[in-house]
Image (cartoon, rainbow, N blue to C red; front, top):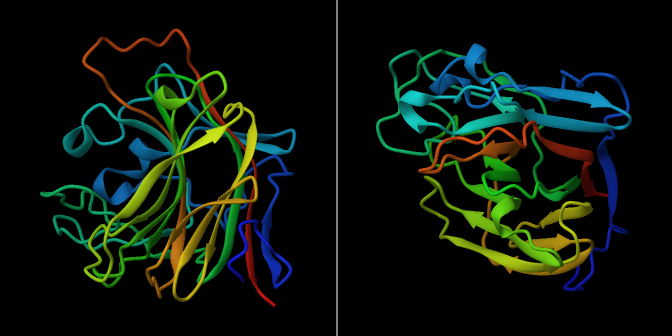
Length: 263
């Protein structure tokens, strides 16, 4: 918890060490649907496999759009660690990503894994496909509308991966939190981003520090004081051209996700 440019975990202990070393998800930790209140659990169920010590989130050729009504042809395979919504036909729900959203399927409240300060780290592989994006983002539970800020640990677009490196998006997005201001950027990272790399945020009471492979890449001098839930996913983003499924499935491989808390 210093201003060092390398990630120092000596002041922390491991609170959660998700190694994906079984044959299925730990359902006391992971909710395998993507914002189902804006759609349904049936339409947003994650496609995944846990095998050989990794999680593999997958978009197949026959994966349908998760919410054609509100998000067009976007396809996603996603895990989250909390869920909250208001009743059907209300506008109350997590991650209000556009105007006009209405709850289509009310959800039971789930508070599974809710970090509050410390370090969140993941080891993952990007996907070099022009329509793919992989991400780990942390959002407020949003039972109070202002508690909706986003901490983006990483987002990696396949179109921004090259032979010798690429761009990794990190930072803070206010969403509907008036106490926050946008502070997000895409930082260049050397190396093969389709190989495993470590992405982390050190979340302190007065600032957030973002790391790639243990090296500091960005600091945000803002305060997010409420617990957050994890959002881990692979997207297939639409284009004007007809959908090409020759490269499917798109597989996002995750070796581990960890939470460290102060000793």
